[in-house]
Length: 179
Image (cartoon, rainbow, N blue to C red; front, side, top):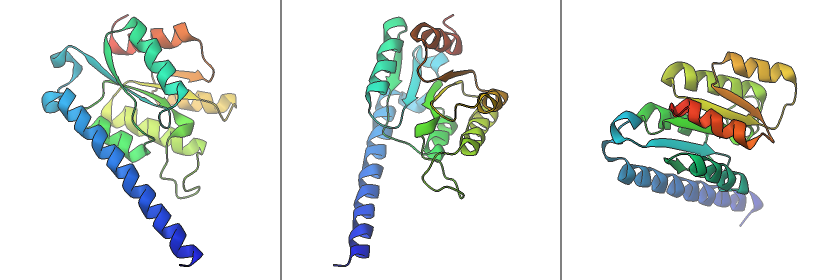
């Protein structure tokens, strides 16, 4: 078996495993949200925390939210921008908490890599098209111009990592109408 075919086979296996995890997440959401109703009709808000996979950061954010609010928090595997937009389009999520650096952007310029322009386009589309509240966290770029441009997209709250716990909890409360 040649090196190229081994690499292709490995990529195929990875893609299939990823699709299987994503299907599992959709099944869980369907079971938990009969008819995919919004927060106003179910009484419980659904928060999606996307930090790029199951990490300590995901667990920490979920714990901080659950300590203060009675909400259902979902932490999917790493998702692409298109998949996150799909959640918004289907009305599955009442609030997105996203680490912008860890989303798999469909960028023609830098495939598979983060670039600031991709995150700006993604957040603009999420907020402008679906009007879903978004709390975004980012680690880089650290330039103040990047943060200013992100705020212009209509994002609800923006935090540089690391951020203050109380401020993040308050932002969640404000986005979901608890504060």
